[in-house]
Amino acid sequence: MKAHLPLLFLVSLLSACSGINEEISAQIQAQYDASSTAPINLALVGPSTWERICVLGPYTMNEQAEKVLGFKWDATGKTSIGGNDGINVLVFVKDSEVIAYTEYRRDKGDFSQLTPRCLPRDRAIVVRQIDPNPRNNGWVNLVASEHGAQPGVREGLR
Figure 1 (cartoon, rainbow, N blue to C red):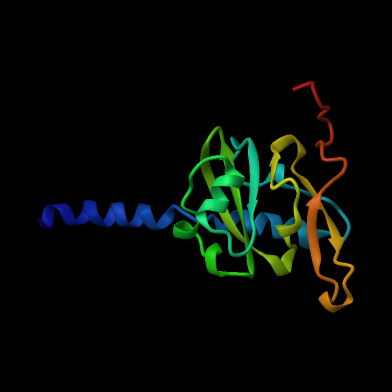
Figure 2 (cartoon, rainbow, N blue to C red):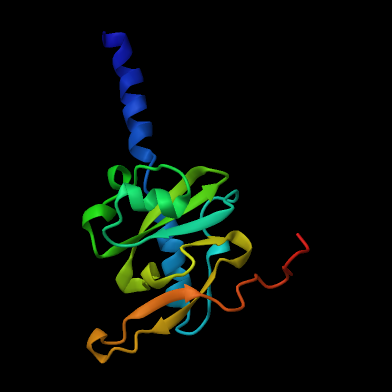
């Protein structure tokens, strides 16, 4: 049994390291904080292999996550989205597989108004939109850019 303890420790450590990628949130927040007007290019964050990014809003349950993603994923088991209204979960997808995800604080730009809920990498640019309701005290929504193509990438020429 003692011989297996180091292996069990390593497996536990690796399991703890997988999961929510806080570095992705830091990368998005760095773009958000760098300019109050510049678009945020989500194609620059996360793993290099993702094809689309999907947003799960506050209180999303697994059934809703499946509808957004197009496949089953245990959003409530892997994140706090099912009971947390202070975050959005950004899910990075390749084919029909989640390759990374992060919990992003809504007070640093709220993705919950993003439509469509998933954006392909070459159109993953969001812009700030101030909530017009004065009771929301200048709340910043992050919405898809009308000109979502990345600079230098023309549609249909990939």
